[in-house]
Image (cartoon, rainbow, N blue to C red):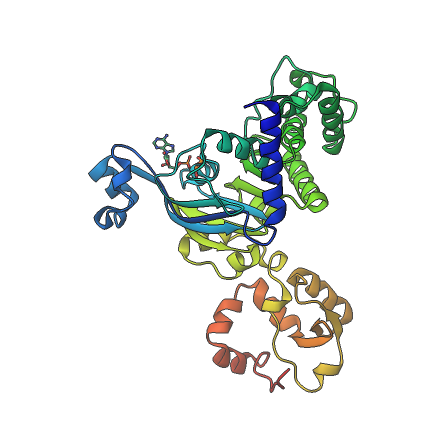
Length: 385
Ligand SMILES: Nc1ncnc2c1ncn2[C@@H]1O[C@H](COP(=O)(O)OP(=O)(O)OP(=O)(O)O)[C@@H](O)[C@H]1O
């Protein structure tokens, strides 16, 4: 494709992006990726789809790395794909831009059918619209930091002065100012990760796809890079899809988390939804050690106020973390009122907040009457709010 044609294709892609702000960025329905002989027959054959992973392997020699998965990725969100090793995270995310060819299902990017895209449209998708940041950033060892960052722009055909300028901006953005002329080998692991990040950002994709980019880093640098991603996301609002097998990373970064097991999404929700209401024992096991009060908000801890309580107490917003409300209650010595847009939604006090910390909030919800009467805390006479 000529440079002009390629530029036009990019403009068209950008125009599409601008024209369709409301819908999901990625829309995935009934997606399958089966590896192995005659993989195509698996998704449509009920006698095979009902088999477990090991039964399927035994009977057909196939592995269903992604099994009938459906979800949307919304504009501007950090969508985390989490799960144990081998659960299908990388395969799923690679299917999104067809770095791995899906076996069945539908897949749209900003309303465009990705499955029917030809070679050139796919190249455009990967280069300009949804860029992948790999664990091993694949930096070019003999090029300077600046030239590494400019690499994607060079491929796009951007003239040298412009791409050097843009690369310098990106190098500064990820905190590597002054290191532009070094070679990757003269940088620490964390700095190399930043170069990879700057290179991905330089092409200004609508979506950044990260495949466990920080898993090889030591914990402090890892934390640093997570903060970097959060900062960039806050500043730019770019949509990000982030693979990790680390729950704390998922909770820190994710607006929503898709939890995978054996190729399926077993739960998809906000960190709070997943921690507060694990879908099954697998998810429960994952979130067992999470400090609940640092993820769950007072919306889930509140109870109706009685008449006397409705007029007193510090006001907190419904998305206030339980840990912050505990500090407020401890300081003031009285309950807090949960208020949204001037309307009181309920009350949290030491008893209701401790219920969350102890992990009893789900049980309390299931048999609130008995527990509340017995403990005298939740059993108080309440007024409707
Ligand atoms: N090219 C392939 N051929 C056959 N099976 C494959 C292939 N790639 C992946 N698989 C299998 O598909 C399943 C999912 O693998 P995938 O790499 O997507 O998992 P993952 O969750 O990303 O794992 P990890 O966290 O270890 O990277 C695994 O059982 C894996 O062995």
